Structure formats: structure tokens, C-alpha cells
Image (cartoon, rainbow, N blue to C red):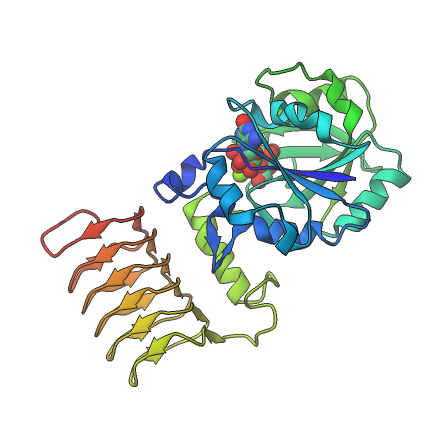
Length: 354
Ligand code: GDD
Ligand code: MG
């Protein structure tokens, strides 16, 4: 059995972070996002290859993940010449797939029981099985209605307020019989959510739902990206690097140099090679990536700072996200929620975002 990770989107909603870092390898703490999904896929018996379906900046992803040997999974990269949409991408990769395929949206993190879902799919002889998760507001997702026997009755992508009839949405995780893709035309932009699924229903194919109550999040927006860090630090989502840590841990890498008198308040994460100077405060839910330098008397709270940033004395950052290699000038106070792309330099005289 093969799995395919749809990882070709441009990550528009996470811009400017995704200008140089495609969404599938955006770091969560110090690991590319895709590694969390590969952790889940590794639990599926008889899965012999994971296909990464890409088109946006594929070489950045290949460089980071290689052939998968170190990750204990065989990886294959399939790069579309132009984006073909979520179903067009599956069709494009069909020749590499076996009889049954696990499909994963590349930006969801979850604690679903994949082996049980595969078993359910086979036992009920489904053509497709979709994982559902309950959410408060389905409008940003695909709404899925089912009957009492778990048959999918209706699939409605991005429903408007008056179309919302239930709280179960498409979790972006499916098991399909690969020949169900025969219906999709070659090299044509095609949507799983707007065409492929509704057509399965129209043709009375056995299309089943499996409701998962485990942790689930789509990290495709800045708020959700920040949220997943909180949830991992709080133990709501048991995942590295906090999976074996007691609540409230300040996780500090061995080679980080934290001056005496720095106040570190957990939960937070300080990666290898970080330097924090005296008088600074690293507040709860802060993430400092590799080799960041935090000068004297800096205040950080709930901010996610990617590797190699420098924060000058007296700066104050609350709920900010900084891309790689940013420089924040002396005494700057950034507005909460500010997101700066790689190599941003904000100085005392620069009012942008300050
Ligand atoms: N290869 C490839 N080609 N991948 C693509 C393409 C494409 O043309 N377009 C999107 N993808 C990938 C994205 O990288 C992402 O991992 C996944 O497909 C889903 O696309 P998103 O753009 O993140 O969709 P969404 O979040 O608005 O909605 C989807 O996910 C929700 C759950 O998170 C839908 O599947 C919803 O129904 C679902 O509820
Ligand atoms: Mg998404």
C-alpha cells in the first residue's frame, strides 16, 4: 500500500513565511511539518512508500527530506508541471499507486488511528473512506453529512453560514481504492472536494466516513500555526519535542547559552546554539529557533522565531512570528500578531509593523 501527501499548495495564507519555505516544510518547533505526518504514516502496517505530490518549490522539500532513508520510510517525489488541484494531483500520481491508497492533505496535523481507518475501509468494502473531525465553525473546510451507517450523503466545500447543517468536516485524510481515480481526466485541474467526492455520491459509490475525535488541526493560517505550538506545549497534541515532557516545561537545548538572570518561563522551546543575554525574559509559549541571538533586556512572549534571528536590546515581542534571519532593532515593540518574512530588518526608525 502507498500513501500520497498532497503538498503542492503555495501556502498563500501563511505568507510571507512561505515565500522561501513551502508550507509542507514550515518548521513546527525544529521539525519540518511533514515529519509529523510521516510519524503517523509509519504506524500503518504494509505501507511501503509515501509519495509527495508537489509543485511549489519542490527542491526545497527534496533537500530537507531526501529519499526518506533516515526517516524509516521510502519517499518518492512526484512534481506536477503546473498545479492540477487536489484531485488532478492524485490522478497525476496514479501510475505509482497500488490498489488502496492513503491520501493526506499536507498541512494537517492529527492524532488519528490510521491502522483502524484502513481496517474499517477494507471491512466495509468502501470505494473511499473519509476521516471527519468535529469543528466549531465548518465554513473554512469541507462540510460532510452522513447517515446513521456512516455513508456520506453530502459534501460541501467551504459552506456559507446558511448551508451549515452539521459540525463534521473533512479532516483531509482519506483511504481510497485507487481505481476510483479512473474517473478523473488526465492533466486537468480537478478538485477532490468540489468534483471527485460529489461525483462519488452522485454515482452511489460506497463512500464512507470515519469520525475521529483525536487532536486535529490544519496549520494553514498564522493563527492555527501558532495554535499548534501552544497545543504541543500544553500536551493537547502529544508530539515531539514535548511528547515526553511534563506540563509547563521550558525545553532548552544543550548548546543554548542563557545568561544568569535571564527569566525563562515555561512552556517554551529554545533550540541549539541560541544565545540569550542578561536581563531578558523568555515568556511562555515562546519558540526560539536554532542560533538565534537575543540581546539584553528583551521581552518575548508567545512569539515564534525561526532560526538565525537577532533581537536587539530592549525589544519587546508578543505573539509575533519571525521568519529566518530577521533582525529586530533596539527597543522596538512589534504589534502583537506581526509576521515578518525571512531576512526582514526592522530598525528604530522604521515604523513598519512597529
Ligand atoms: N500537489 C498538489 N497540487 N497539492 C495541492 C494542490 C495542487 O494543485 N492544491 C492544494 N494542494 C495541497 C495543499 O498543499 C494542501 O496540503 C492540501 O492540498 C489542501 O489544500 P489547502 O489549500 O490547504 O485546502 P484547504 O485547507 O482550504 O481545504 C482542504 O483541507 C481541509 C482540511 O484541512 C479541503 O480538503 C477541505 O475539504 C478540508 O476540510
Ligand atoms: Mg489547508
